[in-house]
Length: 380
Image: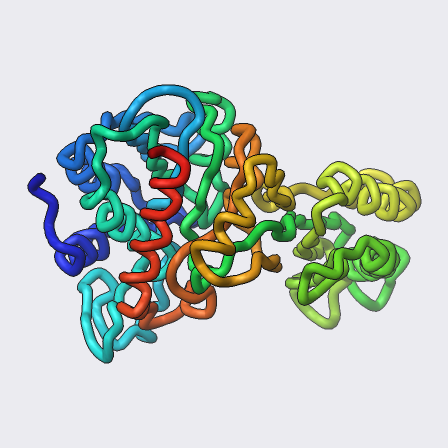
């Protein structure tokens, strides 16, 4: 096996930029990242498949398979990172720095480094003894559209029994999380001189009425609760507003961006119906002036099926009680493969999307042990 040691693996992973962004000027292909991972997993005995993601230019998924048969275990993660804050990093984000028992670099925690942990775990596994297959999935564009996970689920290539998504959870099993949808409302008014308001249509006044309706939806959403979450209610946040170009002109255009985070049990379609029903009053009052659309594809909420006892096994292997999260992941899509799914991995979410992102080397031993425990219990 010609696989570098753990630190060298991390160094090479961090050195390959794989930024995912809606801004095409900084968005990058993840293919070089997958080519690197494919080489290592092939050397470890895995069969490798790399497929282009049709809805995302220059983006790919990698599926590695070890062993044969039905069911098995899937270890999944995304191969992309968020952009980095220019000038706020104390180092080159693509150069691994080891200091204070930490590994610094873009993607060290969230979450390209998880693949280095998987390779650490499988090197001591008797691969010839596998009775069920072990899969490793590296997806594209989790940080934006989740196009990679969406496409993989559409294919239904595998049917594992259990799946672990190695997002940074401090090795605490996450068995449910909220969904996320982001919307933009555009209002087209009619500009004019402010001295004669009747000659125009003020888009800010229309958006004010839309906000009034959305605040009613916010109250409705608060009744959808799940006390397993630190923020138990479904939420709506008014995040960004822009309109007009001068105090002496009637505002001709106004835009409002807002997001909704739903608990499991409240579907995207139900939440969307609440929003559109509320906005319909304003649309009737001002025909053809107000439109709502998604800013990007929504991410559904997630709840583990736990048909194969993955929650109890994870609690046994980690020593932590399963809990919930308010953020979103690829888990609802992986769940559609029909498997028990958990979000569970090394590092802290508090380091995600931060300058000087890092992961503690204290996670190496317990993460390796945890992954080996899953492999042995599920595949051996």
